[in-house]
Amino acid sequence: MSVHHQEVPSLLERIATTMSVAIGRVREDLAGADPVVRRSERADFQCNAPLALAKRVGVKPVELARQVVAGLDLGADAVIASVEPSGPGFLNVTVTDTAVWEQVAARLEDPRLGVGTPELGRRVVVDYSAPNIAKEMHVGHLRTTIIGDSLARVEGFLGADVLRQNHLGDFGTQFGMLIQYLDEHPDAAWHQDELGEGTSAVSALDGLYRSARAKFDADPDFADRSRARVVALQAGDPDTVAVWQDIVAESERSFSAIYDRLNVLLTPEDSVGESFYNPMLGDTVDELVDAGLAVESDGALVFYSQEVTGPEGRPVTLMVRKSDGGYGYDTTDLATIRYRLRDLKATRLVYVTDSRQSLHFQLVFEAARRAGWLTDGIAAEHAAYGTILGPDGTPFKTRSGGTVRLMDLLDAAVSRARAVVAENRDLDPAELDRIAESAGIAAVKYADLSTSRVKDYSFDVDRMVSFTGNTGVYLQYAHARISSILRKAGDPDAAVDRTVTPHPAERALGLALDAYGAVVTEVAATLEPHRLCGYLYDLARAFTTFYEACPVLKADEPVRGNRLALCRLTARTLGHGLDLLGIAAPERM
Ligand code: ARG
Image (cartoon, rainbow, N blue to C red; front, side):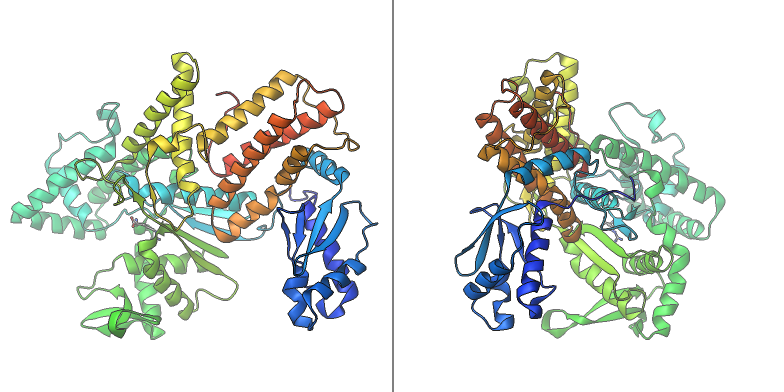
C-alpha cells in the first residue's frame, strides 16, 4: 500500500466542496458548516444544508436554498449540471455525464478504488474470536470470529495499524484437573497426529476434560491431586507447564483448521490468551486500590460503578479480587485494557463479543477511564452482536439440545450449497466440491455480516445458500458472471470515452461505484459490516439492471468500451468489497 496514494475525491465529496464554498460565500455565518450532501432518489444527489442550517441563521429554509443557488459557481469544474431547489429546503443536484465517465476512468486507474486512508497513524486493537483452550469451537464463536475479522480487514485497509488479539480462554482451575487426568492416563490419544481425519485435538481434549470432571466429582483423592496441579501450574512447575503448553498448541492447531476454512486472518501470533496477563494482575489490582477504585467488600475487592445502577438501585460491580484471593474474568480484562492502552499504545479498542457482555465492558471501560488509563481521544468500543437462533426462534442448538459445533455447522452449509450449485450448474465433481466449499462458507459469513450486528438472526441454511436475494452466493455469482463477460471481451483495456451520452442504467451504476469509499469509511466508523453488504447487494442489482438494458459485447465502439469499463470496475469493486468481508470472489462459478 502506498502512503502517497493520490486520492481522487468522490463525486459526493466534490459536490460537497462546491456547496460548502457557495454557502460560505453567501453567508459568512455558515462558513465551514456541513453541507449535508447525500445520494438521492429524485436527483443524483441532494443537498440538505438549507433545511439543516436555516434555523441557525434565522431565515426560512426556502430562502436559504435560494441564496445558496445564487452563490454557486458551477463553472470551475464541470461536475454539477444543475441545482434545483425542491421541497421545504432541499437542493436537487444533477451531475454531468462527463463527470460520471471521468469518475469511472479515474477509479479504474486507482488501485484503492477511491478508498482513502483516514486511519493512518492510528493503532487499533481488535479483540475477537477468543475460543477456550481444550474446548471445541461452537456456534457461539461464529459471529465474533467473522465480524471481528471483517472489522480488522477494513481498519487495516483504511491505513490503521491493526493488532488482532485472540483473547483465548487458556487459564483456570479446570486445567489442573485436565493435566492431572492426562498424567494418570498416558495412553489417552489427543494429539492431532494420533487422531484420525474426522476428529480434532480439541474434540478429544473436550471428551477427556469431561472424564476428568466426572472423576473430580466422584473421587476426593483425585480432586486433591487436581488442586495440587493447579498450584503447580500457577507456581510454574516445569512438567506441568510443559503439558499445559502442549494442550494450548494442539488446541490452536484445531482452531487454525477452522480459521483457514473460514478464511480468517488470525494466526497463532495473534493469540494473547488470558494467561498472558497473569503476571500483571497484582500490579493492576494494586493500582486500583491505590486510586481508591477497588474497595473491600466481604473480604473481596470490588469496583463500584458510578454510571450504572442495577435493579432496585443496587450497585453494579466488577470483581477485582475474590475473597479467596483468586482473580477471574473481570480482573483479567482490567489488566488487559491497561496493557493495551499503556504498553501497546492503542488509539482505539474494539471488543467483539455478544451483547450479553455489554455491562461487563461498560464497567471495564469506566474503570479504565477513572484509573486514568483510558484518556480523551482514545476510543474503547464494544462491538456487541445478537444471538444466532434456530428455526424455533430460540438460541440455535442441535436436535438433541446440545451445542452446535462450528465444524458441523460449516459442513451442513457446504453440503447444502453443494446441492444448490449442482441444481444450477453442470460441473465435474472436483469443480463442484471447490465451488460448494467456497459458496457454503460465503453463505454462512455473508448471512452473518449482512444482518445488523445488534440483531438476532436465525440460522436458515436454505436461505443462506440461495442464488437469489441478498446472499453471499448471489454476490459471488454476480462477480463470476461479470468476470466471464470480461473474459469473452478479450481486450479489457479499452479507454473510456467521456463524450458518450450514458444510458440511465449506466449513470446509476457509475454513481453507485463512486460511493464505495464512503461506505468503507462508514463501516470503520460504525463497526457495522452490514453497511458494506447492503452496498454490494445494491451494486450487484444496479449491475443487473444495467446489463439487462445495455448489451455489452454486441455494442459498437465507443459505447462498448465504456460498458466494459463499467463491467471491469464493478467486478473489481465487488471483489474488493467481498475481500473486506473475508469472502472469496471466484472468477468462475
Ligand atoms: N473467551 C470469552 C468468552 O468466551 C471471550 C473473551 C472476549 N474478550 C475479552 N477481552 N474479554 O466469553
